[in-house]
Every structure is written in C-alpha cells, then in structure tokens.
Image (cartoon, rainbow, N blue to C red; front, top):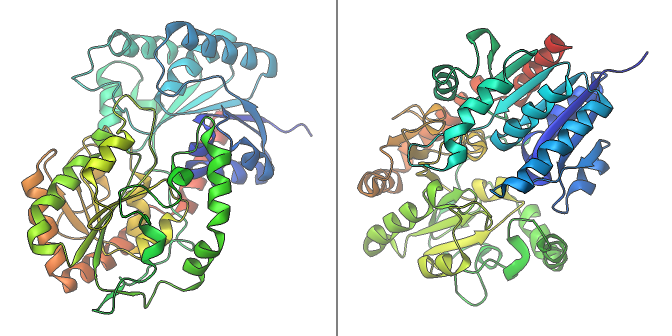
Length: 435
C-alpha cells in the first residue's frame, strides 16, 4: 500500500529540530511518508540521522531581495508540481508566504500552515512594501484550495480574519510546539547559600567579559559557524559532562539566577532586562546573576556582539551564547524573565520554563500572556516598561516562598496545556483531516 506523502517545510534546520522533530517522527510512525524541506545551516545531517528524508531549501530567513525570494517561490512550485505531496505543512510566516503561493500555482492537494507568531510582518511600525502587500498575497494564496491554518494564539487568528486571509472554518488552534513533560521534569529551585558559585566555570568567560565560553562555540549555528562551534563544544565535553552528571537538585550557589532564553534580538526585550538589572545592581550585585542565553541572529533587529559586550560585565550580567543545555540552565535558575514585545506565537522557552517549574515575568503581549496567569505562575507587565520589570524582579528575588508557589503552579499549567503528546495528537488529526 502506497504511503501518503507529507512535506514539512521550515525555514531553517535548527528550528525544525527544536520545534517540529517530534511531530515529524510521530507522523512517520503513523504511516506517513515524511520529507523535511528546510535550509541547511549544518544540521540537515542531524535530521537525516533521525531517519527523515530531507531537501535543502534555498531560503534566507530575513533576506528581502525580491529576486532571491522569487527563486525560493519557484523552487517550491517546481518541487510541489514534481513530487505531488498529499499534505504540505508550512511552518513560519516566510515559508507560509512563498510556500502557499507555490502550492496554489502547482495545484497542490492540501496545505496546512502553522503560524508560529507574526513577527514583524504585521507590526504597525513596519512600513515596508512587503508588509503592505503581504495580507493581499496571503488572502489570494489561501483561497480556492484545501487549506487549514494552525494558530498558537487567538490574536493572530483574529488578525487573519480581520484581513480576510481565511474563513473561520479554516482555523485550528494548538498551544505552541509543546514540551516533553518527562524530559522537562519539575525541579525545585537550587538552594542558595554562602559557599560560592557551583560550576561557575561553565557559564562565565575565563576573561571575565560578556563573551560566552569558547567564544565562537555558542553562536546560533548558521553559515560557516556550525562546524567550528561543534569542535569547540567537543573540547568542552568533559566540562559539560561534569555539569550534567553532577545533578541539579541540591545545586547550591551563593547567587540567585535570573535567566532569559531567546535569540539575541532587540524586540525580545534583551536590553530591557539588562537595563532592569542595572537598576537593581546597587541592591543585588552580590546576590544575583542575570543570564542571557541565545545566539546572535541575522534578524533585522539582531543585537551585535559589540552591543552585548557593552551591556554585560561577565559577572553580574552574563551572555552565555547559543546553548544546547537550556534545560539544565533553567534547572539551575530561580526566575525566568522575558520582557518581549515581539509578535510571538507561543514562546517555546516559556513553555519549557513552566514545565521545569519556574516563575515567569513576561509581557502582556501577543503569545507571551498565554503562558502566564498573572499572579499565579508569574507576572505580566506592560511592554517596554522597565520600572514594572524592576518591581516584579524585586518581588520574586526577595520572596522564596512565592517563587516556590508560582513554580508549582507553572508546572500544573504545563501539564494541563502544553503537553507534547497533545500537540502531536492534534497535528496527526489535522493531517488525517486533510488527506
């Protein structure tokens, strides 16, 4: 019996691995012939090692050259016309933009588009030509074919409806990419005492600056950085293994840790957090560390290494770079701060934080507010409000019992709403609906 073809199209390989791999493997196990179409930044081989067929996608995540964009469109149109997938699953706005047009032109059988945040495309301050014509292009491409759209928050759904891109019956709702609750287990926060930092050599630069361990090792893996990063990580293997085997519960440090995990983009609130940290420095410099975890990006709002060096001192405020041990870093922290004003979908970093059981301070903005019940498992603050961030940081830093209560509430929310098993089940149901 011939298996039905499922093509999952994602802008870059590392994003697929972090956000969509479990869904693809579950679909394959359920009998689908799965192919991953994504840009190779050095991790395509990891997708293939998982047993999935891949096709390298010629796409620039943030490029705006119209000729390059049309090449991506034409590549996908030819691919869909030749391979004739039964279901095409586009993930992310740029992939949706060109992929859905390509599917329409190729006469594709069925399409499902996963909106993982509208990013800057629909932002009011975006006055670019693409931002102006994009809703019209999407309305055209989403009509006259068998198509569903998965939303992670209801604001994005309302935006699509308002712009006339889809009809109500085309909308489906899945809360984020989910989290493996068995892997990301509830972990009590580390004990704070006066015996000095534990494993501090893992998270700070030997030079005492903002640069991450191994300098180039933890940049976001893209272009030529990847292999060099892997080699550097290998050199640190013994140290990383020591960290993992030491166990987290019972970790004792003299300092409380506030962590932000995100790509180093201005709109993610990185500088809002460092500004808040500076306002708190006088009272907490010897008691707290602020960790910025994430790689340098090619987004138009990307933060440069020089800007990070200026904002961090390597002691009180540390940039740890791109990391593969985010779970362990969350377990070794007490508070998660994410003052984003980006048009998020449902931030995976916050979902993982809820599963670990950490109180969260984030903004009352699209996507972020769906992860936090204000005053229950964290605090919601206005966007770009540093003083509100300072106030809530101070509350959580000073109140261990409140952190414990909010952490337990966070885990309960993760179990109710963010289970990876539920996310996979809903995806498979949508694939079957379209087939």
